[in-house]
Image 1 (tube, rainbow, N blue to C red):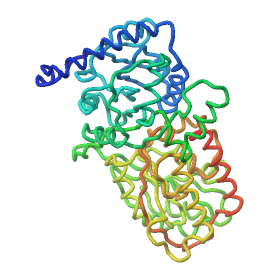
Image 2 (cartoon, rainbow, N blue to C red):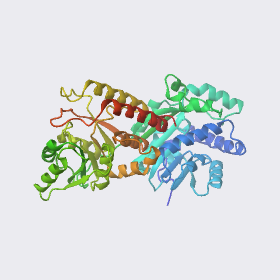
Image 3 (cartoon, rainbow, N blue to C red):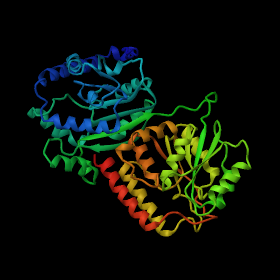
Image 4 (tube, rainbow, N blue to C red):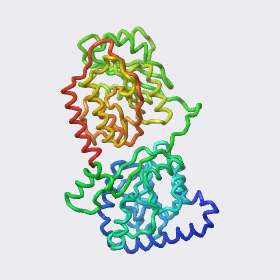
Length: 491
């Protein structure tokens, strides 16, 4: 059930003549826009279709979606939500939205006095914040409607386009608008912070707002991602989540599964058993042995036999590559939290509780180990490998529009429920990554998980040789980056 008007505007504003005049002028304005634009959308048709494409990339079908300032409901409907609720204070807009999209729920209400008795997976605010009297108050209205995994996605016109849009409105080729706030991205980020939200990232879209075959694709999928062209983009996007709530002592601690992909690591097995700590509500250790030339499998069997009652599982890898082994381990894991630990012990197992704390505290939803901050031991990484890792760090930071310092560190931690969503959406990228690192990072980015880097001190191997082949694997990684760019960056 959806109710409204549970949180009224404070009396000081309700009796403020300036506020009331502001709101009434805008209500009349958007009622008139709804009536005038019934038969014709102007030149904005392509612009709105492009917005739909961007929002659909971030909001999979079947989510519970709320849109504030929904207009005629087209954007909300394009999300294919399991529950779709649209809010607009224009009665004429609501009438048209309900008529066009009878499967969704539309409510006439003011965003400043919004109150609903439901929570949503995604909240959309498209081209609205520049038109509001009190942006902070509207953001505060959203906080009770968000659960910890809710994503707030909004877009707003860039100030660079203030004069071109004013000219378009006077010429009648775009929807007319009243005076705007023209907020910058830092302004919006600050107001979201004051309202209890954390900005995860921001980016720019739409350099060419008119439907022009080939030209619009080049401008809006490629050039808008490049310097200096991106500074001329029409709209700024902001993605935010609720600020994490402090952990409470009475909440049950999640259990942990540590997955160890082991190939030719016989000499490290005993140390793995001895050094992996207990975490949270209990830790299980899962080995996936990868057709070793030494007696890795036998060493694990003997270590398990010497520890009766230990929460340990052992499997033979069904295919090839570390990615295949990790997927097998994840599929067999029973823990709430999934961790990857490299069997070479170059990442100390003693650091795993720090990954656990970062995840459980809500500071991150995908915790990525970083080897490139602290000085590493002398023979921990060969010079060419170091150069390659730094290159992929820059490439991924550009691809994902957020800093990510070390893409190839083997230690990555996430919740099992999030991994299951990555698996469900894996078809978007396909089975393209034999190492597993890119598969997880790209999957987390596609789901808009909060990715955080956690620095560790990288150690030398004490047994065996690396399974990485610099040239052949480096070329494969480059091809994967190019493939992912087409699926993440240029969409």
